[in-house]
Every structure is written in C-alpha cells, then in structure tokens.
Amino acid sequence: MRTSNTLRRAALALLTTGTLALAPTALADTGHHGSHGQAWRGAWAASPQSAAAPLGPNWSQQGFDNQTVRQVVRVTASGTRTRIELTNRYGTGPLRITGATVARTAAGKTAGSAVEPGSVRTLRFGHRPSVTIPAGETLLSDAVNLPVEAFEQLTVTLYLAGPTGPATFHSFSSATSYRAEGDHRADLSGAAFKETSSSWYFLSGVEVTGGRDTARRDGIVAFGDSITDGVGSTADADNRYPDELAERLAATGRSRAVLNHGIGGNEVVNDTSWAGEKAVARFEKDVLTEKGVSTVILLEGINDIGGSGPAFPGGPTPEVSVDRLIEGHRTLIRQAHAKGLKVVGATLTPIKGSFYDTPVNEAKREAFNTWVRTSGAYDAVVDFDRAVADPADPDRILPAYDSGDHLHPGDAGYAAMADALDLDEL
Image (cartoon, rainbow, N blue to C red):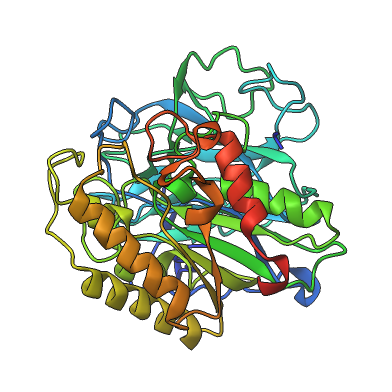
C-alpha cells in the first residue's frame, strides 16, 4: 500500500547577497505555534546521518554542486499550513540552500518526480528565498499555505547552486529521490531528473498546523534501527511497520501521526562510522524535539548484539553485554519519561539463518527479550519477536514474513508487526 529532530529558530543576519544566514549560537526554536496560536505537529521525519556509503554508492560523500534534488515523502498528519525542516547536522561547513519548493506529488504510480500543477509553493526562510545553514545546525522554513491530508505525498525540491561538501542524509529511504543538473526547483515535469537515489538528503522533517486536528498532541515516534527504518520492504510503497501502523490507526478511527526515526545499522550504546550516533546520544535530538507526540516505540538492540562480528558493515563494533544493552534502554526510558512520553518496549525479532546467527548472539537476544517482557521497565510491551516468528521454529522469521535475508521482515512481516501493537496501549 502507498499508502522533528533538533528544531532551531535562529537569530537572523542578512548577507549582502540576499541570502539568509543563521547565527550558529542561536539554537532555540521559537516557532512552536502557527498563525492564530495553532500548534505545530510532526507529520513526517527521518533521522540525519553523516555522509557514508558502506553498502553501495549514494550522493552523500560528494555532495551537490549546481544541482537540484527532488525528494518524495508521505505525511501521516493533516493540516492547512506546512513547513519543512532542513539539517546540516553533520556538514563540514556552511550549507547554502539557493532555493526550495514544496508541492503535492503528481498522482499515479508512474509519476516519479513530477508534481501536481498549481500546488508548487516557494519555500522561504525568514521571508527570504535562500538560506545558509551553519555546520551542525538545523532549521525550519517559513510556513506555506499548502493544505495536506494524512497519507498524501509531498515533493520537496532543493536547488544547490554551489558546492555543498559532504551531505547530511538518511541512508535507507523508503522512497526514490531524484537529481537534475542546474535549477529545476519549479519544474512540474520530472523530465530533467535523470538520476535516482534511495536516500534522503538534508531533509529531516515536515510539520503541519491548522485544520480539524490542530489540537492533537498524540503523535507516535517509532525509534530503532533498520527494522524500524523498513529495510526489506518494497521501495516507494510505504510498507514499513510505522507506515502500516499509521494506516491501521486511521482505519480504526484513531488517526495519529506516526514518525519514523529508525536508522539502518544503528546501535543503542555504540557509535558507528556509518549508521548514526548511538541511540542514547541521538534520542534527545531526534525524538525529544518532535512536536505533538505522546508515545515512543523502542525497537533496537540487534546490532549491538551482532555488530561485534565480522559481518557487520564498516567493521566490527565493541561487544555489548546484555546488561549494558539493558542499561542503554533504561537510559532511553528515563529520557522519554522526563519529557512526559509514554514508552512501548519491543522484543527483538528472530535472527536464525541470518548473518547474525550464532549461539552467543541468540542467547543474548533471548535474554534481552525476557527482560523486555518481564522487567516492567516500559509503560507497555509489544512482542514483535513472537509476531513474526515461525511457530514451527520460533528462532526463525516465518518464511512468509521474511524479506530473504532471515533478519529483516518483508512487507507482510512489517504488516504483522503493526498488527501486533495494542492500539489501546499507544
């Protein structure tokens, strides 16, 4: 079916070029409310990562120069006004956005990078069309009058006239991104966009305000690694388990925004060279700054268990004991509770037959899952392990749910995970 993040409103300094620059010391976001006091809420998100390409080529390490990047996202909240979040969190220097637009994605399965006529809106930053984002910073655009409905697709287009250097990005996107030479930010057609990528670049959030759901503050953040990120699901189909959860909620009359903050390869207590900062460090920046959320689902730890082996991309990370992994989860729970968020803990899914499958790793997984089920540390628990396991061989993913690598679920497996969540406990 096709179905934020460190937000900063900076002190503004106008350059003689007409480009808006953000003062690097001004980090607070004061834009928590839209016009007439309406509250902003997250509608889509992706966790930023530093430039890397451990599993194949992408555009992050080289960056961009006189190129236009067009990116498609699907929102899970409705509103009458929209704004986007751009990030240079891991940039090595200032990032100049020469211009940007947002539009509704053209209808049809073959639309690709085309956008709907009449829907293109020029994005502004402090009322100016260009902006420079200092290294390490994140910002929000001004709001535009672009009403959106939950499960509608938006296309965000960035024109980058000068060299950007290495790009802050999100490695495993669930949608195709597109690149063109020159300035094509206002194009309706996708004809100029000859290159594609399976990552998102500089784009880390979409927020909405207004409409019938303006007072809702009950969004859900799904936090984790590649199984939250949706590795193994069909590209351009929005079949990750958080996508399926958002659809299930809507189908039962309980519509809520669901924001995906998974990073493929991410670990709870170890930093990696390619899969994002460790969860206990990025949780505050990626989750606790999200607007309009009340619940977080924690599914992470299998890479801590398997990452010390030779099969881990980018090289092994330090071995992690079950006790250390548990303490990492307790840290995340404390951080969430301090912000008033409800925490749903998830068991780790099967690994038998995968490149993580060893007796030691399986014993760790089972011990950690026992703690998740019995500790009482979370406000609620979802047993994803049992939801996707083969009843005849419970240490293995059911073949019908397996993407093929015996580690990541496929579309049917992600749907089963979404179905396993008790909606009354979210």
